[in-house]
Length: 211
Image (cartoon, rainbow, N blue to C red):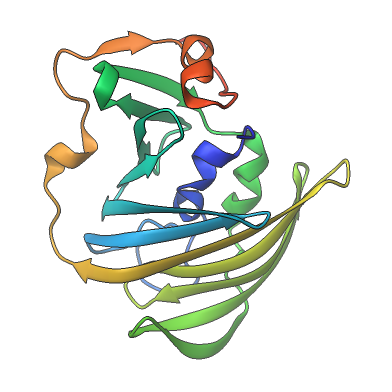
């Protein structure tokens, strides 16, 4: 797997304020309600199906990788994520790639184009065309009135010209409070470095900067 893929399992969590959605600050993917869903992510034509759980500020994504099952825990106010490996009773910290900062732009959702229904959920469809020093994102985003990222169809082109296509869709969304234990690290788990975990996961992972 390429460097971005573990993070792109949770693509819409990366911060981007919701234009006019509420008087307080909101972020793209940081929905104002708790929910669970089946998540379908397709990157450059290859699909990954998994489960996700969300509470404001937190997300959990479960993904079966070729070697083992991995659980990704992400926090909307942090550039550091955790990968939990239940089979090994191990947790790994990794840094979110800077390339995804294109989604931090405050005007990302400045262009609503239509109301649409995705898997029975009412949404607003937004046209996206944003550029930062890391690259350019173009495409479409569908957000529910509660800020749930129901669907995304986008292309990210880096400054060197390499483009990646991304499609995200949620199915069977159930809103409601989610157990806070879902977003924590189990007690007694050992910590493993990103470099040591990479061969187990079949991917390159960015090491967090020293605290």
